[in-house]
Image (tube, rainbow, N blue to C red; front, side, top):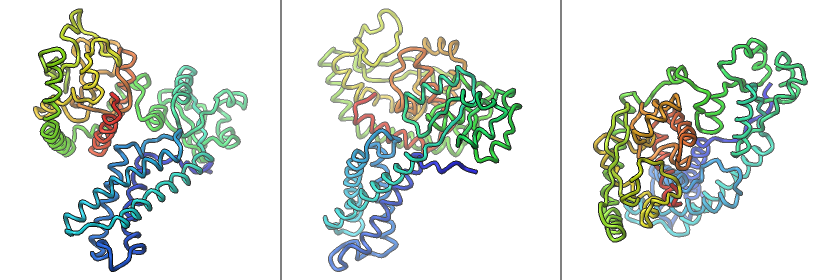
Length: 445
């Protein structure tokens, strides 16, 4: 039957673990590790204590998301996770201190907060150490039965990125008797998963799918496996039929209204809170290179409709005297002030106005210029499907990939946009927003 358990937890599982661990830290420390007579938390009801525990847990998760505690980073040491968890626990303790004072008009003692934070950090570290140890001893073995070109592409991805599985060489199967001996080969070699292409009907006729699965081996489609392993959908291996099978939740009226409410809320808060920074940035632009302060440009939006996008000007005024050009990571046309504005994303603040007008969303694929879209539509078959959702101020591609400085990198970004198109949800939007805050604090674009 099954070869062994896969202990590589996904991001959702880590978020759930941290939420439960942090919430239980408040409840258990208060119940068993605080003197009854001297602590605010011991004087309240169990119902309210559970509420405080859940609030602390939620604060721990949010701070952890901003600081990257839940990102799949197997190459980083346990000490790194402990250090991040200590900062996260400190921020969550401050949030708990504020809430308890607002509701109880009393402060939580510093030793109680220290015990709660310490318990959270130790528990998180122990869970990560235990799960990491078991995951390192039980990496799933994956066999890809795909064309040689596709297998080579997959192997390059596996080599370039940290993945929680081992990719087996398909040539060993040929020596063992070929696809007809697949069931016995999987059983003998301990193969946990076989990856095939749905379109390869000839291969499917050569082995008994039910027999392979009955032997404890999982059989997956290449696109689904790619999406699960790399958090993106490869444009080269999908077509219009894949798009037609999607359950586009982004078109569901409930999702649409919830997303629009989130857009308006974040845009209003952003404009109000960041207006002093916007004024200082405008002054810096004027002092360095004069006006204009704002930069407006035509972009392609929802369903291919053009709109005018607004930004703070970060390039020289003659940046496109020779015509439209792709922006690059170290673009020589960017001014000294513009470099800072781009790294900190302050130049994007005026786009909150586009969001309020309904032309953009907080989260979605970045809008491209009509000159580039026309060319990309011809070179990349599925490129127009990005316009099935509103363009975003940030997006899955923005937090996972670098600048797209040409058609090849635009195709790579499309892989992330396809992932968002398939998996769009309010929770994913919130995750992207929090991850964007992390990239802003790191100064990455």
